[in-house]
Length: 232
Image (cartoon, rainbow, N blue to C red; front, side):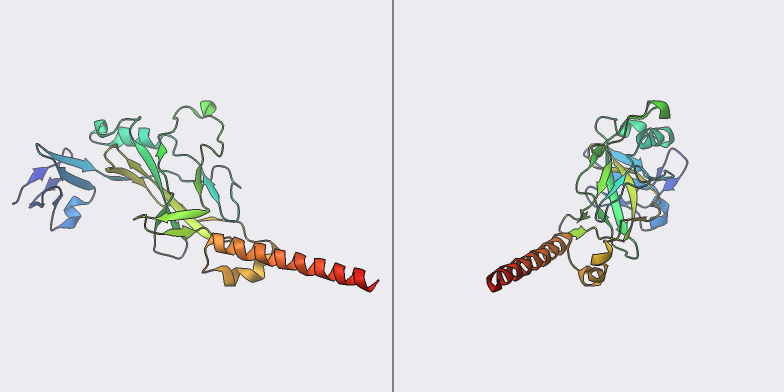
């Protein structure tokens, strides 16, 4: 079946095919910032905006070799309610923030394995002290978008991030632009020669290899001391 709809901003959405739950147009550019969903009684037009919102580290040096901490999405929800056609689509209590992450030089996108509640929004002077409990922790492991795999955050690598705003029924309402890459700290000098070999390994496997190397070194040292004691 087909249908012609006009959005509240005058945009005409036409020749929509109904497949049971989702409406889609053959001219996809017409739907540029819209999601169209149908329930048993009505057709809902939801506008999705790319928000000009700064994504940043939660303080300038909040990074480790396998972890980055991002500043919470303060006032992103309020920015969306000011700009959206129908702010009633999501309340502050039911909306959530998801963090997507893209490794520098790769096309694959990952996410943090949890969603976050809408944070406090108010004057800068009233903003609460940001702690690790409030900051968005990127690493040491990321989750694939379909949640069927994981990706380790590696030392000395760049990671871009963006925030996505969802309502209670998991409809995407807004997405920020991608940030500049934030770089994790590099490995200590003594381990840098091992970085190339570790490039294709998970963070957990890298840790096991390092621990085994240290253990072998200690055992060799203990054996040398025992032999030296016998010779005396």
